[in-house]
Every structure is written in structure tokens, then in C-alpha cells.
Image (cartoon, rainbow, N blue to C red; front, side):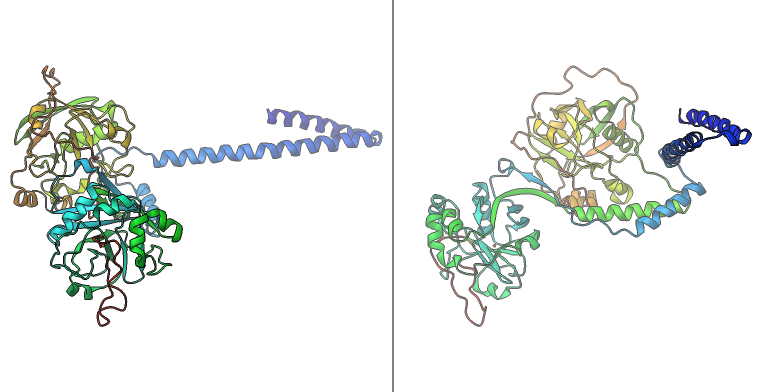
Length: 562
């Protein structure tokens, strides 16, 4: 439309110029003004037209680049294209200049108290959520059996909830363990435990019980060593755990009050947080302490992903690369699992979870699950598998992640979902089967892609005696060599194959609630999706007792005591 207007105005100007040429002596001021006005309008229209033309040209250029970049790549395709290699080289130069991302929060899996065993496990991990951030401690029963039992006992009653960190001595210790609830303090203040002989040294990060100078005086107060305090070893302080994540958080707790709160333990025990909040309002707090299954160092994951991207770009820049991408699965297909307990069949519906279905289909076709063990069995909750029997042959898939799928159907009994850490787009190979309806997993992003249609009774019989003991780091590194040596009675998959046809499922496809796996559990199934997994302190026997000073030759400050 603008071009037409310009043409019309140009014709008018031409006519006026013609008049000027033939009858210049008859043009007056108004004629000249009309010509100048017409020329001005043409210039304005040209200026208006230019941005649109530029935008259109830019859009066309961008679309061309996009089409160039979006050349279809099929599974297993080998690329030997000079143009793509040049693009990859440019991308490699850009990517090489970047550092691996840092500062990502860890991915964790919280285990509800109801899911923990009645007896103290040989090893368990606790995440302490504080006003300065989170830190995690791994407890070892063989280091200090009585101490580990007491920590576990306190955790089961949520003793550490809303607790102040009342003693912070920079470079020495941070101490806590007096309940903010005076009634709870009175209940536990004289509940002492026998001493443990130190088997570990009080080095930085070690978690130890505080104690008075008399034997068997440990109760609820604990401390974390902020430096090398090995001089405390011969004084009988027996470490029971170690900070495995968040030591920077531990060192950042407020210490402006020095030893003053520590000398008022009797008042703290009598009045709890009411007293501390009034007299020492800047103290940091433990919001809550929870059992966790594992911690995934997301910085390590990001670093590995960065290195993998660089390697892929190097291969592309060299002129050829074989892409390990998921093959598109049929809309509906079935997989026969031959296991050590018998046969079961799952039916996959791609519409439920397209990315998940495609990955599952590809892994089964490549024999990934053949020989894999059911390494995690939580009765009346889930059974989990998907770490390769031979990592050297199939381990490349463990860090080949797929994008999340939107939620379609619920995690009902017999459905299969990919396990994943608490981060987006981190599904790879691990899968779990729901032993019961687990709708609490729906909102956490676990999207079912298939369902057991035959042999749920077989799935129910999978050996659960080892529970969650197998270490995923060791499985990832050593595969079945580790599992068969340490957990010889684990059940496993003999072979998984794509069914040739879709014969009707039997009427009793999915049986009733599991029989052998009947204990309650509600934590989220989480895969140890990382380079090196994941994922990845004194008691108040007498809260009124002041800190006992250590011998001058041993320490310049008071030993952690109650």
C-alpha cells in the first residue's frame, strides 16, 4: 500500500516538474510549496517502509538459519557434511570458552520417618535444614554404636526441629542439641547413653556427642568440628558421623555471642527458644532434620554434561558422529520381561509419556536391561531397576538424559515410571514399578509410560531382603560384579524383548496388592543420576552443666561439653 502511494505522489511531482519546465515563469510561491510538501511526504513514506523491509529480511534470514540448524537427524545417522562440521567447529569454539556451570543446589530424596526401619541402620544420612542453608551428615553405626542409636532415636521423634545453634566457636566447634521445647528437654536431660570408644578422629566435619567430665554423660547435645580437633580423641569424644555436604553452611553460623549462651544451658533447658530468642536473637536455627536417601551433586552433573557437550562437538567438527538418540516407539507396544522369578509383561502407551516411551523402547531394543538386577525393593511401595549389568558396555546411556513429559496418568499399582533426581530433564535409564497406588508421586513429576498387564504376582515376589542397601555408585561403576558379591540373592532380569504382537492381556493382568512386599513406604523413587553419586556434633544429659574446660595443654578453649 505504501509503494502505491509513493508511485502516485511521484507522478504528481513529475507533473508539477513538467509544469515547472514548461511554464516556470507562471509558478508562484504556493506551487513551489506544494512540490516541497509532496517531496517531504515521499521521504516520510520511505522511512516508514525501511524498518518493515529490514524486519522482513531479518525474519527471512533467521528462518533460513533455523531451517539450516534443524536439519533432521535420525537415530544412528552418520553425518559427514562439511557445512555441519564448520557449524560444529564454531559452536565448539564458543562452548570451549565457557566454564562448567557452578552453584546448582543439590538434588536430594527425603525419606519419611515412617519408611525407615525400626532398628538403627548401619549407615544413614540426615539433612539439616537451617537458616543459613542445608548441610548433610552421614552416620555410621560401626563408628559409635550407642551414639548412632541415640541419633536415630532422636530423629524418629523429630527432636532437632526448630532448634537453636547456641554455641559457635570459630575454628573449633558449633554445638547444639537442647530442645526449644522445655518439656522435651526435661524428658531427655537425664537420659544418658553409655560411652563409645573413639574409632575416628575429631577432624573437620566430624559429628560428635558432647559430654560432661564424668563417664557415660552423653544425652542429646552434639557438636560439629570446624577444624582439626584430634586432641579431643584421647578425651573420649567419639565421632559418630561426618558432614558430607554443606560444610560451608556449618562454618557460616552466627558466632557473635561467643561462649555466653553456652554458659546458660540451665536457663536454655528451662525456658527453651523463648529465652534464646529474647536474649540472643541473632542465633541461627535448625528448621528441621530429615532422613535422606542420597544427595546428587548437581555441579558434578553439570560439569560432566559440559564435558560431554564438548566431546560431541569435537566429533561433529571432525566430520562424523553417531548420535545416541531415542528411537520413536510405536503408539502401543509390549515388552516381555523374563526374570529370575518368572515372566511378566508390560504394555507401553506412547501417548502417556512420549519421551519416556521412546527411551524405554530404544533401551529394550539395545538389550540394555538384560541381566540388570532389581537393586532397590521397598515393600508396598516400589521396585526399582535400570543400572546396567556391565557398565563398560552400556554405561554410556546413564548420562544420556531425556526431557520431562507432561503428566497424563497417575502412578497407580503396576504402572512403570522413570526414576529421576529432584531436577528437571534428568531421566536416563532407571525405572520403577509401583507396588501400590502412589498418587503422591504424580505432583513430583513422575510420569508413567507403561503398565504391567501380566505377571504382577511375579513382580510382587521379587526379593526384598536387601531393601535399599545396594549402593548405586558401586552399581554404576561395577555392575553385577558388585551386586552378586555383596547381595547374592537379588532377583534380576534375564532378558527383556519387544513382543511381536499385541495379543489380548489375561483377565487377571494386574493382581491385587502385593503379598510379600507389604511394609509401608512413601519416599520418591530417585535415580542416582550423576558422575559420583546421587544422585549423590554433643547431647544434654544434664542441660544445666556448663562446658567443661579442657586441659590447657590440649586446647585453648573449652571442649564441647554439656
